[in-house]
Each structure stands twice: as structure tokens, then as C-alpha cells.
Amino acid sequence: MKGTSAYQISDHPCISFTIPIAAPPIAFAMPTFPPTNQLTRSSVFSVPGGSDELFLSIATAEGASFSEALADLNEQYAAALARVGASDDTAVFCRIFLSDILNQRSVLLASPLFRRLSASCALSIIEQRPVRSGPLSLLACYVRPSKGLLTKALSRSPLESWREGSCNDWRNDLVVKGRNYALLLTANLTASDSFDAYAQTRAIFSSLDSTLERQGMSLLDHGIRHWIYVRDLDNHYKDMVRARREHFVARGLTEKTRYLASTGILGMSHIPERIVSLDSLSIGGLQPGQVLRMEALSHLGPTIHYGVTFERGLRVRFGDRSHLYISGTASIDTKGEVVHVGDAAAQTRRAIDNVRALLAAQAATLADLAYVIAYVRNGHDRERVGQVLDEELGGRVPLIFTEAAVCRPTWLMELEGVAIVRDETQFAPFF
Image (cartoon, rainbow, N blue to C red; front, top):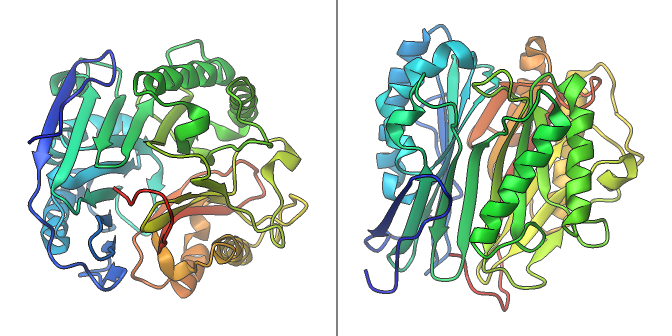
């Protein structure tokens, strides 16, 4: 296709491809699709003449074995793509949530679903036990361009070296280029330094810096969102926070400039010695003033007040829409104190109220959420938390619900998400 080119984005072996895509069908009029069952949910954001963004969550049936659930997930995934009009060509990012990564990894890596996803998008694999679900679940995102132009460059180890026993490095990066912007997504970024969360975090962010530099980007100007998974969070979180804070200061990310939207949460990679794992999103082609800090000071104070360096949320404005990236949000007040200690349901309501306030400050509502991830510290609280989520969010928005400890022991749950709203600015439209 004229005007597009494939390119290499890291030192690993690279698969690059340019994808001509036919003009999309008529834009969907509603933000979500009615679920075909209790396990599959999808949403779409469309504007006339603009690119479509689609989101998909699939849970598996409780009581199924891992092999049974994986086979069913593969079938549900194919059916969902056909239903919403997405495809491997338009896949951008996928995260698979496992309940026991060390015992499930070999079966997953040998599966048709893994082969399909690893060849088409940035693929994150993390152990966070799905709740109200079977042994694994999936979240996936797609961009369907308006002008038939999408270039993807996927850099990773060859598929064979992802298989158990051949390669320990599950990192993979994807650059997706449209007419106006480039998305850089990294998945499963770990470091093989000593068994020390501080050292590993520093090495991970240094590696991310190098990847950004090769794309003509920087953390300050183009970094938007990251997910930091920490093994044994209660012991290692503080060291990760210290390393991140020092790295950000060195790169010019301060309370006077901005930080990134972030979730720091319990999660296990496939190598027990890798304490910290990172997924990230950066956007190339941004202009000054295009990224805005999201705040709701009536409900929750800035994170820097209690020593952590991430934004409550970031708004990225485009010519036809805005992306609202909501960081991990818990039951916290304006002084940084935990609210409703010991009551998981009440904490869920407060966390949702905080998200609602963050969105309201941007003239958005919960109905604008494209997807939500909810974390519960103790699986025994899943029904109390899940009931509030059902009441507040309804059963239509794509939802991933997992068991994972939050950064403070007294926080019993946390949630995050992305909302998309119509916008009109001087900036170029997405994508």
C-alpha cells in the first residue's frame, strides 16, 4: 500500500506487516453490544467518518478444567470477533488472565488461541485469578481505521521460542501506525536482575526508555498508561514505587509536569524470580496541550501527597474524540485515607463514586466507559463486590474481574477503566 512501510522496533527478531483494510461498515450507534451470554461482553466507539474502537471481554465457565475453558475461550473469541466486525488485522492489544500461570503456561502456549493472538497484537499474560469465572479470562482491544490504513510492526521472539523450555522472555512490543498517530504497546516487560524489586523496576524502565527512543518518543511527551504487576505486593510495592519515582524525576516527570495513568497491583509472571512486570501504552504524534491531567479534588487528592507518582487519570484529546484513562482507583478520600475499612461493598461504592467524579470533571459518565477491570483482594468478597459492580455498571460494559491484592492491605478492591467521549479540537483526529 502506498504511503505505508514496515519497520523494526527493537533488537529482537521482528515481524512487520502492512494491512490494507476495506472501508468499515456503517458506524455503530450504541456504545455497547448486548451480551450473547453471561461471559462475553463488547463495546464500540464510533464517530461519523472516524476510526472505530472496539473492546471485548470474555470470561470462562466456572467448573471447567483449564483445557476445556481454553478451548471454549478460543471458540467464544472467534464468534465475538465475527459478531462485532473485528479481526486479527485490527487487533491491537490483548491480556490473558490466568489462575495458575506456572501450571497453565505450557497448555496455553501450545493452543490455537495463543498462536492467533501472539501473531496479531501485543499480548500480555499475567496470573491474576479470575473470579465469578473459570480458570482464565481475556480482554482485547481493536482499532478499525476509517481510511483503510493501518500499519502494524510486531517485535518479539519467534513463536517457537515462546514455548515452554525454549525462551524465558515473553516480552513483545507492537507499534500501530495510522494517518496521524502511532501507538506503542509493550507487554510482559521484565528484568533478569537480582531478586530485588527496586533493581528490576529501574532496569524495566530503562528498557522502556530505549524502546521509546528508537521510536522517536519519550516517557514525558508520549507515555500515557502503564500497568505494573508486582509479585508479593505487600513486601515489594514500596521498592517498586521508590524506583519508579527516581526514574520519573530523572526523566522530567514531576508534579509540575505530569505523571502517567497507572495501576500497581499484585500479579505474577511466568518466572518466579521476576518480581516486577510491566505493560505500557505510549502514543506518538502528540502535540503540546493534548494530554491533560484528570482530577476530582472534591473526592480524592493528588497521589503525590502520599508519595506515589501517578495521575488519577489522563485525558488525551484528539480532533474527534477524547480517551480518558482512569488509573487504579480505590476507596480513598481527599486526605489519602482509606474509607470504609473492612467493608468490601461500601469500598466498591466509594471507588465507583471516585471514578464517577473523575469522569464528571471531563463531562463524561460511567456510560462512556469502554471497559472496566475490577480487582478484589480476597476472593471471598467477590459476591459483595460483584453485586455493586452489577448495580452501578450494569451488565453490558466489558468487565474483567480478578483476585489481586491492592497496594494497601486495608483496600479490599480497586478498579480501573477507559472511557471515550466525542470531542472537537484543533488536534488531528484519531487514528
